[in-house]
Image (cartoon, rainbow, N blue to C red; front, side, top):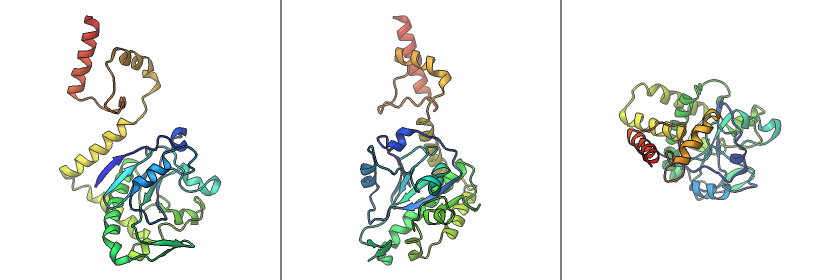
Length: 261
């Protein structure tokens, strides 16, 4: 499963930077025949867009668009959108070829779209298992792993049908999804090098975008002023992440060069 990060930095939700302690995960679908998450990312990465989610999942990849502990805008407002304060939001992209009428899929070809759905579903199971592990969530506990429609039934989300307007066409239920996520978690006991590498990559990415603590502000200013910390090619300084021996040597070299001068 390919994982990318394309944070919606121009979206007002991202700029607000409100933090949450995730207590669950809410699954959405985009509600339009569009399998390419880049289309939504381009449209949503700007000011005055009243929606912002944590990730998009498709048949080939997962694209994270908010830090997992940021408050998203994904399930409505006010009381009927209270899951914004508690749940990570994941949008499932839908395959091409259908339309909607009154919330119902029209012209949806189940047989043709089964391979897309299965690959997307497998990616979603793995992602949710990783998130449940990271935030110590039990996918079988009531209200933890739900879809938007279930959120509405619980009074914590607006009136949407996703993903129950789609998944049952492929004989998939949220109950089965929760069991599959739990099975994936239990299967992690059989750790492979590939799984470990994938988890480590995801962990380092999360550490790399974590904001530094306030107590280090003066020292950070000193280090940046001397060029000891200059950031990577994208300007990320990764203060909450770990330094390799190569990076440590480079920092020592910069210190020595400046003091020698």
